[in-house]
Amino acid sequence: MAVKADKVDVLIASGGHVGLTLALALRRAAPELAVTLVDLTPPEAAGKDARASAIAAAGRRHPDIVLLDLELPDVGGIDAIPRLAAAAPEARVVVLTAYDTEERVLGALRAGARGYLLKGATGDEIARAIREVHAGGSHLAARVAGKVVAQVRTPGRTTTLTQRERAVLRLVADGLSSKQIAGRLRITERTVKFHVGSILNKLGAENRAQAVAEAARRGLL
Image 1: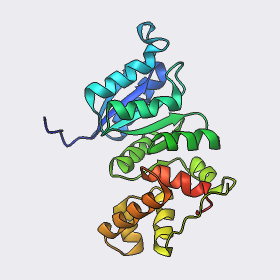
Image 2 (image 1 turned 90 degrees about the horizontal axis):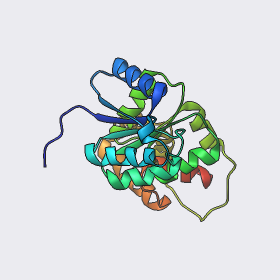
Image 3 (image 1 turned 45 degrees about the vertical axis):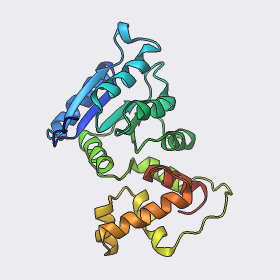
Image 4 (image 1 turned 60 degrees about the vertical axis):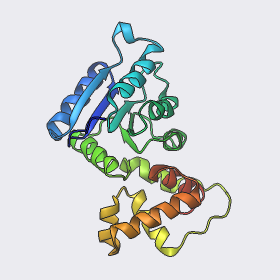
């Protein structure tokens, strides 16, 4: 198997003017990223083929990050996230959307998205989200994070988190990486990863973004 270059490989699954603008803004803000745009709007990629084109591109390139535009017609929206994960298991998905409803946000996170950005985000914010997600963290747009944390609590099964795990979880919800959390709490990065693993296990989550969504649902944040 070929060894990947040091550059973070980013696949943008979008189209038309939006896709071109995203690619240009990201290349300007973070020239160290390897950015590829898959245009899903030309006539030959219209309809259901648009989703297939995105999934096929991810399967061919095996990118580190997929920046997925959820608003393209017939791309499948949130349903495309697990299919992308199946095609490129090592890729982490960051979604870009115009909507910030609780249903939309939690649906994307539970489907496996590691980041949630709103359209209108600057190139710098997109680049920051990509770096945080690639480093093993998660990134939620500020407006989205507020909705997740403040959503109406729904009773769930009892989960006991230690005081330290709750502290780590709150910082994870803020989008901090393991290294940043270690510095904030004055513990080792290895200890942070141990706590994160325990949190994921207790919440039945597969990644940090899912853990934040589930913790908010259970009223643990």
